[in-house]
Length: 580
Image 1 (cartoon, rainbow, N blue to C red):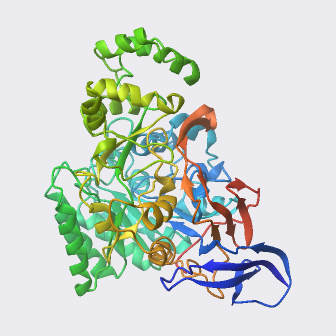
Image 2 (image 1 turned 180 degrees about the vertical axis):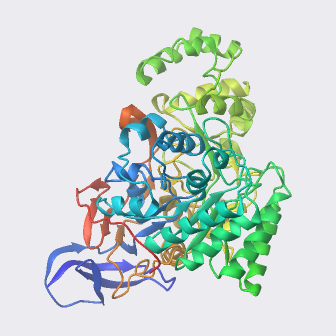
Image 3 (image 1 turned 30 degrees about the vertical axis):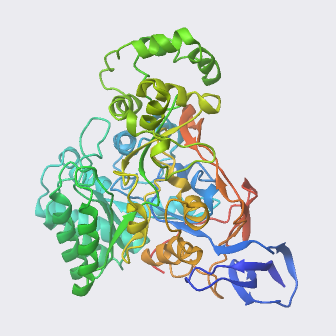
């Protein structure tokens, strides 16, 4: 008697091998049999004829560190076939924490990852101080997906050094030793790795870079050795120069990462993007990562499957939000606001006005408004379903030229599409020239790992947690502007490869003995919907949610957690500890 039997599916097993037709049986949360016409009864049977059966996706770059304490579904990531997620990235998180320092960590996370501070303050249940205690607290919770976490350098530094650590002062040998001890204890308790941020684009709400941004090599190597001594794991980072502000730093970063990995034997993964100031720099980083393997190092550039930027529109941040006539309407509900924005006299007034001065501290959306105002020609209409690899004719510049209007007029009118909820993509990275095939080149590099979805973060500006769906729908089926990618290869990149990088050898493929994490997908209909801004976080915090269609079922440990995209209420998700 099986618990679950999936009949007649087209199995894409995550190994990269050719697809085949077979049944998949799951018992006690583990795959019990794979093969044609399996004999035996089952408590539940799913007919998957004509459908894809894949392993559940493993998303290694999320920021649900606070949300896991109050939210069981962990959307939007769980909406896109993800059955295991890894958080604690980029050096920010909520453990360890000294009593009384909780609000400072919230402000750090809000500044770096654009997660509403009020939501974190109201939602997080602080019942830990040390990182092992944080893991123990998570152990008591249940979710729709499995959750693993890394220990963040920023929290460790602030815990050991207090204000000095928060202000990025140099650490003493004794402080470095204390940090290393905390990291080792965390890994021994089940942390999947250690993370840090070295990009000055990551700043707390007070404007200070993340603790550890300027850490010297002795501090970084101490963390790496502690990682090794604790049992092993991943060293993850947002490297210096990632924002393109220092074009010498990236290669220096690759050099110390290479030496760290070679010495400790641990994998290092780092965010890698094409930056406008040096559009070919990423190729040097890729080549250096590949060459490092000859020295025994393991460097894995973490790349995105689509342009890396922000979404702008009347729901979110946009270039008109600091105009007096718009500010007079900003208090209205979105439906009422759109009615007013459609009025010719309101449109004319807003387009004729100058921005008012920003507030003293300003908001993330205000910063986006200023940024986007200078790049209107390079905004792209997403559409519905969204096209994340648009060609030049979908740009505001091309639309303005074709219609004989200004870029501001074209952008304003584009924002009013889809009942005023249209979103335009501002590709800050990875799309310097839309005619080049940069993203495909990055994805297909032998050392690349798919990541950077940032689920749970950048709540009002980005919704890249939907990346797994883009990988399946766009890269294997819909792409027209260039060569597609093989389905078997794309599935492996999001399952076996990501699971193995983080030491989770018990999942990521459809094989007997592996965890019963499965997606059943209608490859003909899988598609993204336009992101929507909702206010469903604690304290009414806002976030973008992007749904998908075509996921017939998502299964975690043998339990169906979603049917046709809808949450079933099953909560088989657990904390994943340690390398396995």
